[in-house]
Length: 336
Ligand code: TRP
Image (cartoon, rainbow, N blue to C red; front, side):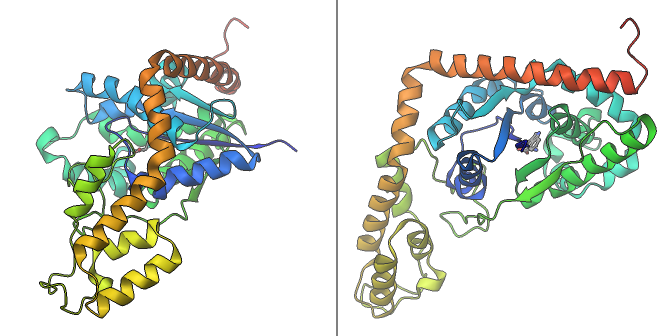
């Protein structure tokens, strides 16, 4: 049986944190290791430029950071193809062809794009760029360049995948059945709250633990996590349901520890400091293999470069095959 093709990826705009890990990376590694899929992961530098066109250095630097985060989490280049989006010109070419198959008002109605534009008033002012408004078209090209059937991603990506499906249907209707219609595979992983209790963990919110954080940094961050505000003295009765430390214990500690921690907190028998120290220790241990692998790649940038180069070369071959079919279907195969 042919393995199903997976296409997924991220914008290289910063290092990854534990929210990304539980939200999507863990799932990707599991899918990779199941052996049932042929997975491509793109480092979406072209898409990152749509809202960072004025900051090319940031995007460039984060391409390698993102690759190192993937590798340290267990993405294995022997099994998974990691590639750089801008090095696949076929994707840019497809974006142009697809732009005829989508209307401006449809793009303006895309809920994800709409939310992002609202958040980026400072960058875009009153009028958004053509490139940003159109990034769903480019994302449809990312996926279809590789005949991606499954796209493991978070809920926020749903409108983008829906839009890609519409483009595929329209293309196939007009030019013939060439493209594969992708499906989203929602990460079953949960969304991780920030250290401050915010619903979202994020760079701009300053409430994240990064996969690359040192032991000291992890400890410092955990010590600053928000606990039950009504608990002032150690023997005040606490409520773990509204405590971020208890929340993270549930992710990183054993069932037994969780039970003891919550029981002693409710009974006023355990201080927050002790509770936080224990949590910090568990997070440090949990992330140790990731941190160690990352340190290895940081010391061997040439290995990271080789992985990216080889992944991109392989991806380019696949992209050319798709492009050939597309051009034939669109009657653009002039001299063949
Ligand atoms: N939109 C994704 C993000 O915001 C990145 C991305 C680009 C992507 N192309 C993709 C994800 C194709 C899945 C499939 O991080």
